[in-house]
Length: 188
Image (cartoon, rainbow, N blue to C red):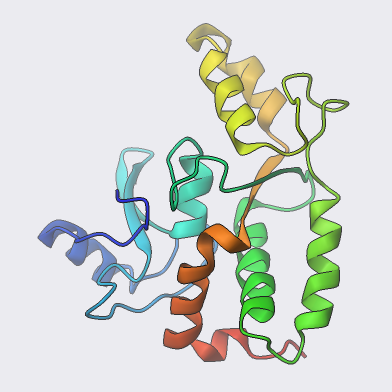
């Protein structure tokens, strides 16, 4: 996967993307293909032994260690026990797009995003954290967990969620806005 997340899909991936109607299995977001971004910034990942479609945000949550636009620290890790990764990905997509595209509700989006940023995982909650909400520190901690302690590790990490960086994913948010503007209409 290139760091830009824009890749040439294989024939089999194209079939899977079409079968899913470019719908993310985690958050339900529906993307669209274009000649410039054939994948629509969706990715086919083998998940639970099946090829499954995920949007760029949800796939990055599953693959925290990969580089996105030249950085492995491409988002925040939040302590969010009451929200799913899919819900958080949708919120991040709407909030970041509203701010980038200066949509009518950008000020409200900024306020909500600030509240999410206050949910960053800290050293107080997770001893492996040095900096608040660091993606790279979480990856390092996950790598250090030994296979025979997976059950304990899943309890430690179960409330951690990924919130993507607006700067790192700007091109993705802009693409999704151009190809699916109705998704970003002001909430009622």
